[in-house]
Length: 489
Image 1: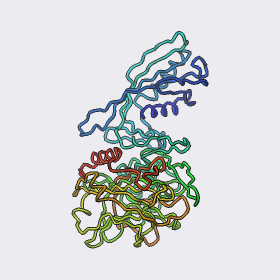
Image 2 (image 1 turned 60 degrees about the horizontal axis):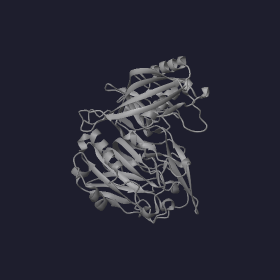
Image 3 (image 1 turned 90 degrees about the horizontal axis):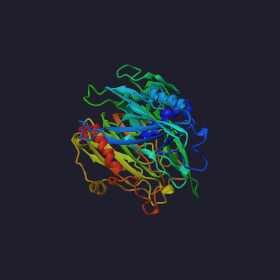
Image 4 (image 1 turned 90 degrees about the vertical axis):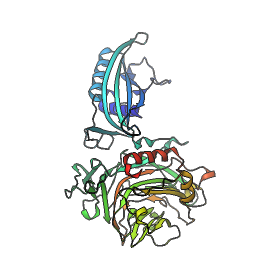
């Protein structure tokens, strides 16, 4: 993980290494590579030794890693020059570019740096020592340089590649999106093109209305599938590095709140038709094999739907998953429609919560909702669409259900609707809604995580949601949420 991040930094910053001669552990061992060839130098071999730092928190939140670089060349001068360049780049490394090395801008907050490189958020890198060597039989000069690297034990570590049998279909998974609305440093304004200089500031209109909110892991890849009526064709698609609304029109943009008057972490507030959506070419995310959604939010205004996830004005066969947490009079509901624009009583709609108990289902500064749904039977080969489970609690009411209780009491039955032919019949559309005639009463959101499987489910469990409450990933998700939003404990 951190080795790949160091590889990315050095390849980007040092021109003599931009053709990729940076390797883990050993030099390549194959017929196309000769360690005696001048063409293969300079080169760097790296290795790492990792341990968790102790902290005042119950769980360590910082990872300490010693990274050793072995810089190799057939001339001492080149070893020395490359070593100097490496030290200039790595020692006290901070990503100060506007757009970020890998499309996520870094920032400084509360005495700590944040430099994002794929699934790593780096705090500090320090030079430790170096030592020269010479391999006489190979006529190769070497310098071992050691660095100490500190990076955050963050949920973004769950973004990595799991190879499919077809290597052309290897997505970034299971974590596709970590949208953190508590960090204004990961938000910007702009028109159709992002303006990195337009940073967000609470209470300063219009700079309290972000229309670009960055995914902490930058660009990701996901599997899209197209059902033709006779076969499923899979492709690997790109997600851009942010969710956005490509306009600076205030009526469509949410508002960043610093949380001070609320006594909470910062959040982004949505009402009416304010919305953002993933900035890929479809303006939505295709999820043929299902997904796990995790939200930390708070419903704030009554007498209307609150579209935590909503829809646009797309064609009927492009309807996404919609989720609402609503209070109308004394009645409180949390409900979903896996393929819709509105809640119109369709048989596929599911009501997760229906209560008049405000203390349990409306109050509280923080609300947690996780929702794991399977894909559509056109793609999974199963007998139903969107079977799954959910878990809900808030900062005033947390029954702390066991995994058995979740599976028994919070299961979601699938539906057998004919979803039609096409690639878009289970999708994630947007936060908020712009569907004609629909609005959100008002809610704040702190964070959203979306996990997706890396392949089609096995035939024996094709209807089961791809992520279960017994999975280690779900345990780590809740550990992360409890640590950050400790009022939920």
